[in-house]
Amino acid sequence: MVATVVRLKLTLLRHSLRRDPWRLVVLLLGILWALGTMPSLLVGAWWLAGPGDAARPEILVVVGTLLVLGWVVIPVLVFGTDDSLDPVRFATFAVPVRRLVPALGVASAISVPAAFAAAVCLLSVIAWAGTGPRVMIVAAVVAPVSWVTCLLSARVSTLAATRVMGTRGGRRLAAAVVIVVLGSVALMVGVIGSLGMSAALESVPALSRVLGWSPLALTWAAPGAAASGDLPGAAERLVLALVWVSALVLVWQRLLRGVLTRPVVRAGPSRRRDDLVLDRSPRDVSRVAAAAVAARARRYWATDGRYLSALAAGLVLPVLISGLVAIAERGAVIVLGPMLGATLGWGRHNDTAFDGSALWMHVTSGMRGIDDRRGRARGTLVWAVPVVVGGSVAGSAVADRWDLLPASLGAGLGLLTVGLGVSAVASVLLAYPAPRAGASPFAAETGGIGASMAAQLVSSVATTVLALPVLIGFVLAWWWSPTAGWVTLGVGVVGGGALLRSAVDLGGRALDTRWAALLVRVG
Image (cartoon, rainbow, N blue to C red; front, side, top):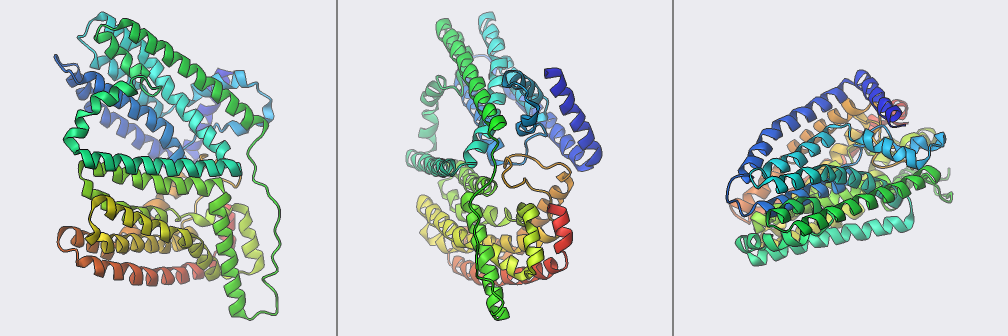
């Protein structure tokens, strides 16, 4: 079974590379990035192997924790990166889960990220060079366990997220988790800001001791325990790490069995609306059509796992990035509002494709393109504007720079409206395949790598260029005079709103001429 699944993955990979040259470009770029990073990691490992480096155990524990966390979080936030061996596709083959788990596990190890993680785990052995044979043996034994932990963590996190997003209670739980993560990052930034950077660094040893007994870093702390002469402690950590790996396998089996026997499907009661009647004036019909699209978009944001995944990424990533930057400079958290506006606005650049085959209802109903564009923009603005405003206020409060609040609001709202404007056009002209409704939000559609890269690049550049006035105003307010923030606020609200309206009109006219072609493209 293992050989069959591995051969299947290699065959699918070969065919996809032959059919979509851009996928080959992405693969080569990933390999080049991994190879380019390895010399720096190797130098770091040799530096840690230097004599008398007392911080080596703490540094390795922190590095290992971040590595495992990356494998847990990144596959969930950066969705659309899952390989072609989606477990749901095995549901009709009646393959026992006990045979499918090792096959999928070995197949998942055949990837550039997995090879990179394996190299990082092996470099930890080099970091313990010169500490004695016992420590080296412990490091060599736990390195493969660290790698397997990373792979299993990714498998469990993506399958668990898929199951959670498929139920109403699970979506509420996911929302609670996102709130907890955002609050934890804000608390961390606040604590570090109150302690100061030097005091925060002094607490790293104590933090590493706690992390060393967590499932995230048991294997990374075992060589340190052996180096300090605590061989029983190293053996205990190794045993606990193996127990954790076994638990991950059992959880993965349970989740996989659920996916195979009860696939996530999107279903619900049908709704009938009598809003669009023939005796309405054209203006009323246009207004009601836009309102119907906006209502459906709001329902998507509350019930569709694909939208909820995008929402989680659009909220968590800006908070994490601004929080990490704020660790070095607390005032830098002022960028939270603009980052939220940029990610939430730009993230809708392929919004039309998420309708999939349901787009035929727009085509057959004779809906005008401008009504579709208006409804989608309103469905996002109704919740995104309060989020950006809240992020700007929170950033100003944490940074203690209330004088920069107008600049943060102007930049955030400007980036949001500009991003939605670019998306109103890009999602018509540069649409590419998206995960189907009811499918895993983390699955990648084949044949769309080149189109997705082109759409993301063009929409990113267009958003940046069109948002230059508010970006320049934000920088001037931050580094020159906060008074410039009021100008930025005016430009962001008035100019961004005018640009969004013009982009909605342009995207609507383009949509009127491309309904059928777009349906073929995304349906």
